[in-house]
Length: 210
Image (cartoon, rainbow, N blue to C red; front, side, top):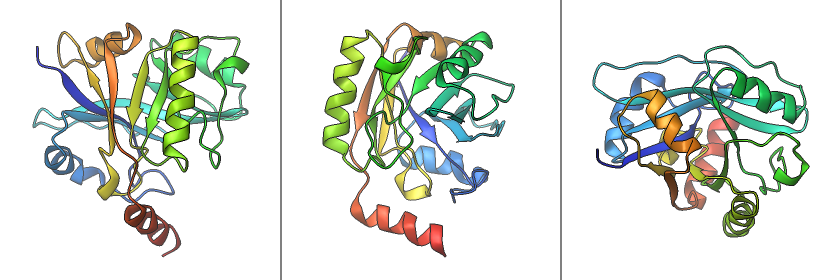
């Protein structure tokens, strides 16, 4: 089975601050040479599937009382404003994968791994949209090693141009959602990618205020 390249942190027009059209996802994914994405809208589910073999991992980005938590592979909404520990537990109780995104981005609602009593399944060490990309990457990698957590990557894309800036290479036994989630839990992953360009950061701001 070839390695899969999946952007694990993508927002579409279903999120109030994002502008990528859901119907455009397959063409963007092919253009970026990815196998698929995780659709992680803010506090809402956006179940999608396409007939062309594009991998879409169901998920959401939950606004816990302590910061954001990504849940992958879940089918029931996780209420916002619960504690981060309760949010992680609820994700895992559905058989989902709980990921702590952008733990060191100074302008995001961040959760520090050391503050959690409940162990998540992975930490996002590469986030393309992070303001302090290099420093955030270094600190998150340190946490990944210190807490023995798989390291993953995602673009945190809100516009089409940034999808795939960061992604995760996954050594799964098949293209099924369950096998991909199992590979993430078992650490058969490594993050790749780069910081979103200043031009695309500016483009995102223009979209936001237009």
